[in-house]
Image (cartoon, rainbow, N blue to C red; front, side, top):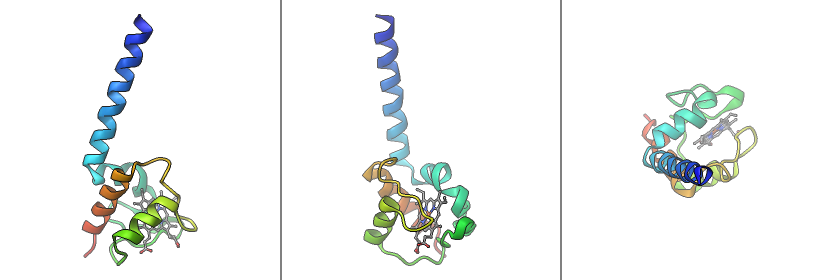
Length: 96
Ligand code: HEC
């Protein structure tokens, strides 16, 4: 019974975390993207593209984030579609 309750609690907390991530592209960016792209999108580690000067539109953005490209990791197994869309919206907000 105790194990059962514990599992239920774990499931509940994971769901809450997922909902929060989906709500905030900024959180996802800070957790998964910042180490290469930098907090303002310009760091360029491993040749990461400058996200402030990127002019990709939504379809291409979500495709690159999902499938990756050269040094850019693929995120389709680690982020939900909604999370990919919210992080794409967030990086567009970094543009100057
Ligand atoms: C391990 C380092 C690394 C991480 C982590 C990383 N990226 Fe990248 N990213 C790159 C590199 C390198 C490129 C350039 C790929 C190329 O040259 O084709 C890139 C390119 C991109 C591009 C294409 C921009 C353009 O105009 O061509 C987008 C969009 C992007 N990254 C978004 C993200 C997002 C969103 C995340 C987090 C979910 C992320 N990246 C995490 C390294 C990284």
